[in-house]
Image (cartoon, rainbow, N blue to C red; front, side, top):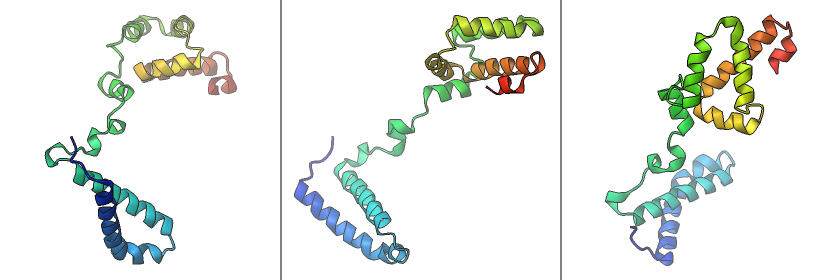
Length: 158
């Protein structure tokens, strides 16, 4: 819960603090001719102070509480499970791929690409959130095949 601050009190407080800030920082920014930066900086700074004054001391939020600064799930997947062993599809595929003969791996990769619908970019994006390194491995095996077997640098690049 926040302490109620009237609009009039808030604007007065904002004006006082902005005036204090401008006196201190005016020379620095004015010498560079960047009034817009000064205005935006002052507005952001004092808006944050205004809301900080309205919040109770024990319940103040920090940037770490903002969802935008929370690690994304795909980042956790890459850091905590790079082998994608927690996912049923990718975990089983990895075991199957590593147990296949090297010359048969590209066929298995192609089969799974079609089976999982990875020719659709939307599905690739969804799977990238689950197993980024698995998709990189698929692309590597396709590119390696196209370079070594087909002899096509252009096809391997795409």
